[in-house]
Structures are given as C-alpha cells and as structure tokens.
Length: 277
Length: 312
Image 1 (cartoon, each protein chain N blue to C red):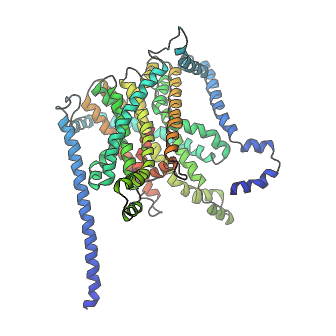
Image 2: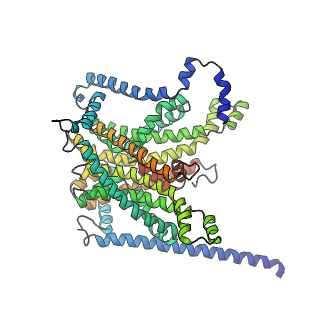
Image 3: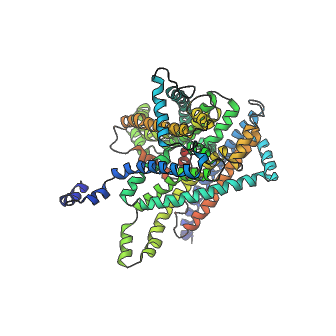
C-alpha cells in the first residue's frame, strides 16, 4: 500500500512546488504591472494642473468624464460610423487589389513590373497621399479611399506573394496525380496554404488603414474621428481632443484584437496551435 | 553552384526573342514608370476635356519635374529665389537637425529602458503595457498634442520624434537582451573571463543586430512623425513646406516635395545605414539585418503593431 502511494505523493508535491513558483511569478508580474499603471496614471493626474495647466493637460479622470459626455451625446457613434465605413470600403478594395497583384506576381515579369509600385507604396508616407487626394477630390469620399488603397495594397500583395512562393509543390503534384480539378485544388490546397499569409497581410494593412483614414479625415472630411480630433484641437479643447484619441485607440484595439482575432480563430479552427499565434 | 549547373543545358539552346523578353526583369521594371507616366498624361488630357475646372489642380509630370529642378538649381543661380521662404537645402537641413536631436534622445532613453526591461522581469511588467500603447499610438496624435502644448518652434517636432521612435528602440533592445546566448556567458564564466571582457565580446556583439534594427525603425518612423509634426506646428522644415504648397493649392509642389522626401530617406538608408551596418557586421558570415528584422517581426503581437506604426 505504502509503496503504491509513495510515487503519487512525490509527484503531487513536485507539481505543487512548480505550481507555487508559477503562481508566485504571476503574482509578482501583476504586482509590478499594476504598480506601473498606478505610477503612470498618477504622474499624469498629478501633472495636470501642477506641471502643466489643466487646460493643456487634462487628467485621466477628466477624460473619462468627457468620454461619457461625448458618448451620451451620440457624437461618438456618428463619428465611428463614418470612419468605419471609410475603412471598410477602402481596405476591402485594397485587399482585392493586393490579392490580385500578389497572385499575378507568380509570374516573374509581373513581379518585376510591380516591384517599384510596392516599394513606393511602402516608403511614401500616408501624409503625402492624404494631402494630394485632398486637393484633387476635396471632401468627396474618393480621397480617403484612394489613400487607403495606395498605402496598404502592398502589404497584402507582399504577403500573398510570399505565400505563393512557398506553396507545397508536392501537395499540388499529388492533387494533379489524383486528378483533382483546378477549383478543388485551389479550394483545398492553395487557399488553406495562403490563409495565414493573408491574415498577416490583413492585420498589418488594417492597422495602417485606420491611422491613414484618420489622417485623411483631418484634411478633408466633415465627419469621422479625424475630423473631430481636428475640430477639438483647433478649438483648443484638450480634454475633448485627448478623449477622441482615447476613443480612436480603443476602437482600433477592439477591431484588431476582437474582430480580427475572432475571424482568425474561426478560420483556423481546423488547425491546432496556429490559432493562438 | 547548383543553379549554374542547372542553367548550363538551357543556355546551349538558342533562346528566341520572345522568351528573352519574357524572362528579363529589367524590361518590366522600366516599363512600370513609363506606364504610370503614360496613364498620368492621358488621364490628364481626358479629365481636362470632361472636367474643366480641375485643370489647375492636377499637375502634369513636366510641372513636377520643373518644380523639382527649380528647387535644386535655384539657390545657385543669381537673381533667382526659391518660392518658399527657405530653399531646399536649408529646409532639409533644419528637419535633419530636429530629427537628429530627437533621435539621439530616443536612442539613449530607449536603450536604458530596453536594457532594464530585458534584464529584470519586474521592470518589464512595469513598462510593458505602456510601451505597447506607445507603439500603437499614431504619430498624428503626438504631432497635434505636442503642437498644442509647446506651440510653434523646435520643441514639438523633436518631442514627436522622441515619442514615436522610443518604443521601437525599447522593444528591439529588450528583444536583443533576451536573445543573448546563455551558453556563451556560461562558457565565459567557466573560462574565468573577466566581466567587462565578456560584456565587450559577448553581450555587445549579440545585441548589435537588434540595435541596428532599432536604429532603422526609429529613424524611418521618426522621420515620418517629424514631417507630420512640422505640418501642424512648424514654421520651417520639410513638413512645413509641404503644408505651404497644400495651402497654396499647388499639387505639383506637394508631389515634388514628396519625391524629395522619399529620395532623401532612401539615400540616408543606402548611403549611411547600409555602410555602417556593413562595417559593424563585417565579422559575421552572412545574415543581413533585414532578414533579422523580418524574423523578429514574424513573431508575436509586438510585431504587428511595430510594422504598422512604421508606416505612418
């Protein structure tokens, strides 16, 4: 009896020790993390009104209050709606164009043809496109959309191209040997293989898209988060301005971490371990 | 080697003109700008017919080239002046000075925080979320904010450069400290190598590639942040000049300055950073730091936001 239970006891104690150590580390990590929050928020709260005037640097409590006011007024939802619409249309278009360019870049000729386009799209700052489209299109919807497309299509196309390059040739050959038709091959081999690359492209492209959208809204728009930011900064209402930045930040975080992540998890359900990355 | 042998039998066959055309990569590369210019010209003609009021808004390629050539040459010609208050060289000089000072501050503070975060878990937990927040923050927000706080002048652009560049330095340096090979340190201990020599020969070389990634990212992002800050709160500099042309409703000026801007960034990258990194990495067999940055950014979440923020 004793001999039988002995290893069990040994086992549990070892595990307990490990668990205890892990728990201790977790507690320690959270302790420092919370301390960090307290420190930075404290400096901010203390700084407003003491180091800088409160009109210049409103503290966090003030911003939360303003946030509630703006939300209750319905202004925030309206701005979000306008911005989301622009991002959706612009990035949707950009995704299609990027996918197309990435796919035809399998051909070396087209790859070389689009190489400089990709380079320009990646290096030219969004500000330039925002200003040029603002001059040409004024307040029309075309301005922000063209800007989003020009700044983000390259990220999608580069990723698709990388994915196409690393297509598993043996699987494609096997598909051919077993006479799987073109549609089936694309559906079951090419698309699942490309999916992670596409998601990377979307994630990168998307996080740029929302910044660029807000930038274009600053110059040429009558609605949206960027417009509200500009208005409040021109009226020198720092509390509203910081609140809009916070709103914009939360919104982006929500779209990236919740919406995109949900899509990704859903798509990669069949693959274990990938969904987490 | 293998490619050479594989190509041998091919080259013995006579290659037709069409296949040569299909295979060469420089023809499409040259064709791309030609196509764009063609589209630009033809599009202009069409739009001028159907949309007459947009004539002065849309610049022709020749106008842009003229403007750029004028900006380059006018300071050296007697009796001619640049359209803006200061000429091209002074403008970029000013911006570069701001960029440089902001960059140095960001490097120093970022390296200190990054080292501390890499070495201690407590410090890492303390700063982590706030560094991530800084990473995700667009330069635009800082530009407007610092503009309101500091007003016109040098301070707002410099602080914007510091704030946009610093998270990249921190993330890269932290990653570098974490990736130092433990075995090498253990070996140094076993062979009783003094601590300062171990630092000099193990820690610093293994930190270097990450440091360079940090420099590159901080520079290119700082540059974009600087221009946005100058647009909103500058009285001179590259960003201010772009804004000047925007306010004057001269699109050819904006496009011309955009070209200067891109050329300038590429030159800096090619002439300065590549030279330095070649020299520093002479001892290494072959790993370009570009590959390293990519490998780094294949990784977790920091990556996505890092590349994303790099854009704007």
